[in-house]
Amino acid sequence: MLRIAVPNKGSLSGPAAEMLHEAGYQQRRESKELRVVDPENDVEFFYLRPRDIAIYVSSGQLDIGITGRDLLIDSGANAEEILPLGFARSTFRFATKPGTVGDDLADLNGKTVATSYEGIVAKHLADNGIDASVVHLDGAVETAIQLGVAQVIADVVETGTSLRNAGLEVVGDPIMKSEAVVIRRTGADGEEAAESKVQQFLRRLQGVLVARTYVMMDYDCRVEQLEKAVALTPGLESPTVSPLHNEGWVAVRAMVPAKEAQRIMDDLYDIGARAILTTAIHACRL
Image 1 (cartoon, rainbow, N blue to C red):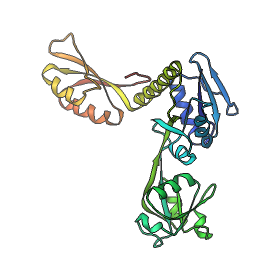
Image 2 (spheres, rainbow, N blue to C red; image 1 turned 90 degrees about the horizontal axis):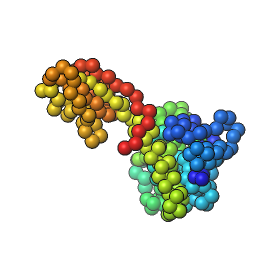
Image 3 (cartoon, one colour; image 1 turned 90 degrees about the vertical axis):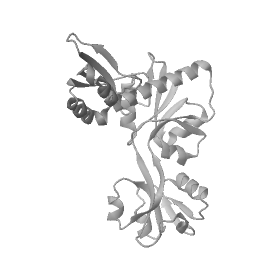
Image 4 (spheres, one colour; image 1 turned 135 degrees about the vertical axis):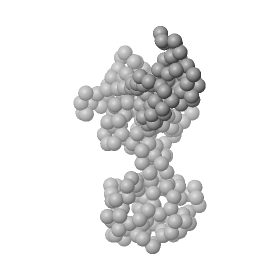
Protein backbone atom coordinates (compact mmCIF):
# COMPACT_ATOMS: atom_id res chain seq x y z
CA MET A 1 0.00 0.00 0.00
CA LEU A 2 1.37 3.41 -1.01
CA ARG A 3 1.88 5.69 2.03
CA ILE A 4 1.45 9.40 1.28
CA ALA A 5 1.92 12.47 3.51
CA VAL A 6 -0.59 15.31 3.06
CA PRO A 7 -0.58 18.76 4.75
CA ASN A 8 -3.03 18.82 7.63
CA LYS A 9 -3.49 22.61 7.75
CA GLY A 10 -2.48 25.93 6.27
CA SER A 11 -2.53 27.18 2.69
CA LEU A 12 -1.34 23.82 1.35
CA SER A 13 -4.01 21.68 2.99
CA GLY A 14 -7.22 22.62 1.16
CA PRO A 15 -5.82 22.75 -2.39
CA ALA A 16 -3.91 19.49 -1.85
CA ALA A 17 -7.03 17.67 -0.66
CA GLU A 18 -9.03 19.11 -3.58
CA MET A 19 -6.45 17.94 -6.11
CA LEU A 20 -6.32 14.46 -4.58
CA HIS A 21 -10.12 14.27 -4.68
CA GLU A 22 -10.11 15.29 -8.36
CA ALA A 23 -7.52 12.58 -8.96
CA GLY A 24 -9.97 9.99 -7.62
CA TYR A 25 -8.59 9.48 -4.11
CA GLN A 26 -10.63 9.29 -0.93
CA GLN A 27 -9.93 12.15 1.49
CA ARG A 28 -10.76 12.84 5.12
CA ARG A 29 -14.19 14.14 6.07
CA GLU A 30 -13.12 15.90 9.26
CA SER A 31 -10.04 18.00 9.94
CA LYS A 32 -9.28 15.97 13.07
CA GLU A 33 -8.64 12.80 11.08
CA LEU A 34 -4.93 12.00 10.95
CA ARG A 35 -5.08 8.96 8.69
CA VAL A 36 -7.31 7.80 5.83
CA VAL A 37 -7.10 4.43 4.12
CA ASP A 38 -8.28 4.26 0.49
CA PRO A 39 -8.51 0.51 -0.19
CA GLU A 40 -9.83 0.90 -3.74
CA ASN A 41 -6.66 2.72 -4.78
CA ASP A 42 -4.37 0.85 -2.37
CA VAL A 43 -3.24 4.13 -0.78
CA GLU A 44 -2.91 5.30 2.83
CA PHE A 45 -2.87 9.04 3.56
CA PHE A 46 -1.27 10.59 6.65
CA TYR A 47 -2.17 14.19 7.55
CA LEU A 48 0.89 15.90 9.01
CA ARG A 49 2.28 19.37 9.74
CA PRO A 50 3.56 20.74 6.42
CA ARG A 51 6.97 21.49 7.95
CA ASP A 52 7.36 17.86 9.08
CA ILE A 53 6.46 16.13 5.82
CA ALA A 54 9.91 16.25 4.23
CA ILE A 55 11.40 14.70 7.39
CA TYR A 56 8.93 11.81 7.38
CA VAL A 57 9.46 11.17 3.68
CA SER A 58 13.24 11.30 3.96
CA SER A 59 13.11 8.71 6.75
CA GLY A 60 11.57 6.19 4.35
CA GLN A 61 8.54 5.63 6.58
CA LEU A 62 6.34 7.32 3.99
CA ASP A 63 6.74 6.82 0.24
CA ILE A 64 5.89 10.32 -1.02
CA GLY A 65 4.45 13.56 0.28
CA ILE A 66 2.95 16.88 -0.71
CA THR A 67 4.56 19.98 0.79
CA GLY A 68 5.98 23.34 -0.23
CA ARG A 69 9.26 23.65 -2.10
CA ASP A 70 10.27 26.21 0.54
CA LEU A 71 9.59 23.77 3.36
CA LEU A 72 11.49 21.00 1.58
CA ILE A 73 14.60 23.16 1.14
CA ASP A 74 14.32 24.70 4.60
CA SER A 75 14.17 21.25 6.23
CA GLY A 76 17.47 20.09 4.75
CA ALA A 77 15.90 16.63 4.54
CA ASN A 78 17.17 13.91 2.23
CA ALA A 79 14.20 14.28 -0.13
CA GLU A 80 13.70 15.68 -3.61
CA GLU A 81 10.97 17.32 -5.66
CA ILE A 82 9.45 15.08 -8.32
CA LEU A 83 6.39 17.04 -9.48
CA PRO A 84 5.40 20.73 -9.14
CA LEU A 85 1.67 21.16 -8.48
CA GLY A 86 1.06 24.81 -9.38
CA PHE A 87 -0.69 26.05 -6.24
CA ALA A 88 0.42 27.86 -3.06
CA ARG A 89 2.92 29.89 -5.07
CA SER A 90 5.10 32.35 -3.18
CA THR A 91 8.29 34.39 -3.62
CA PHE A 92 11.00 34.87 -0.99
CA ARG A 93 12.71 38.25 -0.86
CA PHE A 94 15.02 40.29 1.32
CA ALA A 95 13.64 43.52 2.78
CA THR A 96 15.00 46.33 4.95
CA LYS A 97 14.59 50.01 5.76
CA PRO A 98 15.02 52.25 2.69
CA GLY A 99 18.62 53.26 2.14
CA THR A 100 20.06 50.60 4.47
CA VAL A 101 21.12 47.98 1.92
CA GLY A 102 21.53 48.19 -1.85
CA ASP A 103 20.28 45.76 -4.48
CA ASP A 104 23.65 43.98 -4.65
CA LEU A 105 23.62 40.78 -2.61
CA ALA A 106 27.16 41.56 -1.46
CA ASP A 107 25.71 44.45 0.55
CA LEU A 108 24.45 41.84 3.03
CA ASN A 109 27.98 40.99 4.13
CA GLY A 110 28.31 41.59 7.87
CA LYS A 111 24.56 42.08 8.31
CA THR A 112 22.10 40.08 10.43
CA VAL A 113 19.09 38.60 8.63
CA ALA A 114 15.93 37.59 10.52
CA THR A 115 13.67 34.93 8.98
CA SER A 116 11.35 32.05 9.70
CA TYR A 117 13.13 30.04 7.00
CA GLU A 118 16.68 29.78 8.32
CA GLY A 119 17.58 26.81 6.11
CA ILE A 120 16.62 28.55 2.87
CA VAL A 121 18.31 31.83 3.72
CA ALA A 122 21.50 30.31 5.12
CA LYS A 123 21.88 28.12 2.03
CA HIS A 124 21.24 31.04 -0.33
CA LEU A 125 23.81 33.20 1.42
CA ALA A 126 26.39 30.41 1.56
CA ASP A 127 25.85 29.51 -2.10
CA ASN A 128 26.60 33.13 -3.02
CA GLY A 129 29.59 33.52 -0.70
CA ILE A 130 27.88 36.05 1.59
CA ASP A 131 29.09 36.27 5.20
CA ALA A 132 25.95 37.24 7.12
CA SER A 133 24.33 36.04 10.34
CA VAL A 134 20.88 34.43 10.24
CA VAL A 135 18.47 34.70 13.17
CA HIS A 136 15.49 32.33 13.28
CA LEU A 137 12.14 33.84 14.31
CA ASP A 138 8.72 32.19 14.21
CA GLY A 139 5.79 34.09 12.76
CA ALA A 140 5.88 37.65 11.42
CA VAL A 141 9.42 39.00 11.14
CA GLU A 142 8.70 42.59 10.05
CA THR A 143 9.26 43.93 13.59
CA ALA A 144 12.74 42.39 13.84
CA ILE A 145 14.33 45.49 12.29
CA GLN A 146 12.34 47.94 14.40
CA LEU A 147 13.36 46.12 17.58
CA GLY A 148 17.00 45.93 16.57
CA VAL A 149 17.21 42.15 16.22
CA ALA A 150 18.37 42.37 12.59
CA GLN A 151 19.13 44.88 9.83
CA VAL A 152 17.43 42.77 7.14
CA ILE A 153 14.55 40.30 7.00
CA ALA A 154 13.84 37.51 4.54
CA ASP A 155 10.22 36.47 4.08
CA VAL A 156 7.44 35.60 1.67
CA VAL A 157 6.43 38.62 -0.39
CA GLU A 158 3.15 38.74 -2.32
CA THR A 159 1.95 42.31 -2.85
CA GLY A 160 4.51 43.94 -0.56
CA THR A 161 1.75 45.80 1.35
CA SER A 162 2.69 44.44 4.78
CA LEU A 163 6.33 45.40 4.20
CA ARG A 164 5.43 48.94 3.17
CA ASN A 165 3.17 49.26 6.21
CA ALA A 166 6.16 48.33 8.34
CA GLY A 167 8.32 50.96 6.60
CA LEU A 168 10.36 48.41 4.69
CA GLU A 169 11.24 47.87 1.03
CA VAL A 170 12.25 44.83 -1.01
CA VAL A 171 15.91 44.70 -2.02
CA GLY A 172 17.84 42.48 -4.40
CA ASP A 173 16.68 39.58 -6.52
CA PRO A 174 14.24 36.93 -5.26
CA ILE A 175 15.79 34.29 -3.02
CA MET A 176 13.53 31.62 -4.48
CA LYS A 177 10.07 30.93 -5.89
CA SER A 178 8.04 28.27 -4.14
CA GLU A 179 4.90 26.26 -4.80
CA ALA A 180 3.35 22.99 -3.68
CA VAL A 181 5.34 19.96 -4.84
CA VAL A 182 5.32 16.19 -4.61
CA ILE A 183 8.47 14.93 -2.91
CA ARG A 184 10.21 11.58 -2.51
CA ARG A 185 13.23 10.35 -0.59
CA THR A 186 16.37 11.10 -2.59
CA GLY A 187 17.50 8.05 -4.54
CA ALA A 188 14.48 5.96 -3.53
CA ASP A 189 14.21 3.00 -5.87
CA GLY A 190 11.78 0.78 -4.02
CA GLU A 191 10.27 -2.44 -5.21
CA GLU A 192 8.88 -2.62 -8.72
CA ALA A 193 5.29 -2.77 -7.44
CA ALA A 194 5.80 0.33 -5.26
CA GLU A 195 7.42 2.21 -8.14
CA SER A 196 4.45 1.39 -10.34
CA LYS A 197 2.07 2.83 -7.72
CA VAL A 198 4.15 5.99 -7.42
CA GLN A 199 4.09 6.52 -11.18
CA GLN A 200 0.34 5.91 -11.29
CA PHE A 201 -0.13 8.51 -8.53
CA LEU A 202 1.96 11.03 -10.48
CA ARG A 203 0.05 10.36 -13.71
CA ARG A 204 -3.22 11.05 -11.91
CA LEU A 205 -1.99 14.37 -10.56
CA GLN A 206 -0.55 15.31 -13.94
CA GLY A 207 -3.95 14.53 -15.43
CA VAL A 208 -5.58 16.95 -12.98
CA LEU A 209 -3.05 19.65 -13.83
CA VAL A 210 -3.72 19.27 -17.56
CA ALA A 211 -7.49 19.19 -17.02
CA ARG A 212 -7.25 22.46 -15.12
CA THR A 213 -5.07 24.07 -17.76
CA TYR A 214 -6.94 23.08 -20.93
CA VAL A 215 -10.50 23.05 -22.25
CA MET A 216 -11.95 21.04 -25.10
CA MET A 217 -13.01 23.17 -28.06
CA ASP A 218 -15.43 22.02 -30.77
CA TYR A 219 -16.43 24.00 -33.85
CA ASP A 220 -17.56 23.71 -37.46
CA CYS A 221 -15.73 25.32 -40.36
CA ARG A 222 -15.58 25.31 -44.16
CA VAL A 223 -13.03 22.93 -45.68
CA GLU A 224 -11.24 25.78 -47.40
CA GLN A 225 -10.64 27.43 -43.99
CA LEU A 226 -9.49 24.24 -42.25
CA GLU A 227 -5.76 24.94 -42.44
CA LYS A 228 -6.20 28.35 -40.85
CA ALA A 229 -8.45 26.85 -38.19
CA VAL A 230 -6.01 24.05 -37.39
CA ALA A 231 -3.22 26.62 -37.05
CA LEU A 232 -5.29 28.28 -34.32
CA THR A 233 -6.15 24.97 -32.59
CA PRO A 234 -3.27 22.54 -33.17
CA GLY A 235 -4.19 20.44 -30.11
CA LEU A 236 -1.60 18.35 -28.32
CA GLU A 237 -0.77 16.09 -31.26
CA SER A 238 -3.30 17.23 -33.84
CA PRO A 239 -7.03 18.03 -33.81
CA THR A 240 -9.78 15.55 -34.65
CA VAL A 241 -11.47 16.47 -37.94
CA SER A 242 -14.72 14.84 -39.07
CA PRO A 243 -16.85 15.50 -42.18
CA LEU A 244 -20.31 16.97 -41.63
CA HIS A 245 -23.50 16.03 -43.47
CA ASN A 246 -23.44 19.35 -45.31
CA GLU A 247 -20.82 19.08 -48.03
CA GLY A 248 -17.85 21.38 -47.65
CA TRP A 249 -18.07 21.57 -43.86
CA VAL A 250 -16.07 19.71 -41.19
CA ALA A 251 -16.29 19.42 -37.40
CA VAL A 252 -13.05 20.03 -35.47
CA ARG A 253 -12.19 19.10 -31.88
CA ALA A 254 -8.99 20.06 -30.07
CA MET A 255 -7.64 20.82 -26.61
CA VAL A 256 -6.70 24.48 -26.18
CA PRO A 257 -5.21 26.42 -23.24
CA ALA A 258 -8.06 27.64 -21.03
CA LYS A 259 -6.58 31.11 -20.60
CA GLU A 260 -6.50 31.61 -24.38
CA ALA A 261 -9.91 30.09 -25.15
CA GLN A 262 -11.83 33.35 -25.62
CA ARG A 263 -9.24 34.84 -27.97
CA ILE A 264 -9.13 31.63 -30.00
CA MET A 265 -12.92 31.61 -30.28
CA ASP A 266 -12.82 35.18 -31.60
CA ASP A 267 -10.15 34.29 -34.17
CA LEU A 268 -12.05 31.19 -35.30
CA TYR A 269 -15.23 33.21 -35.73
CA ASP A 270 -13.35 35.77 -37.81
CA ILE A 271 -12.28 33.10 -40.33
CA GLY A 272 -15.81 31.73 -40.62
CA ALA A 273 -15.98 28.97 -37.99
CA ARG A 274 -19.35 28.54 -36.33
CA ALA A 275 -20.99 26.55 -33.50
CA ILE A 276 -17.86 27.13 -31.41
CA LEU A 277 -18.14 25.45 -28.01
CA THR A 278 -15.81 24.91 -25.07
CA THR A 279 -16.23 22.27 -22.36
CA ALA A 280 -14.30 21.62 -19.19
CA ILE A 281 -12.00 18.61 -18.92
CA HIS A 282 -12.45 16.71 -15.66
CA ALA A 283 -9.69 14.15 -16.08
CA CYS A 284 -7.22 13.02 -18.71
CA ARG A 285 -4.13 10.95 -19.45
CA LEU A 286 -1.60 12.17 -21.98
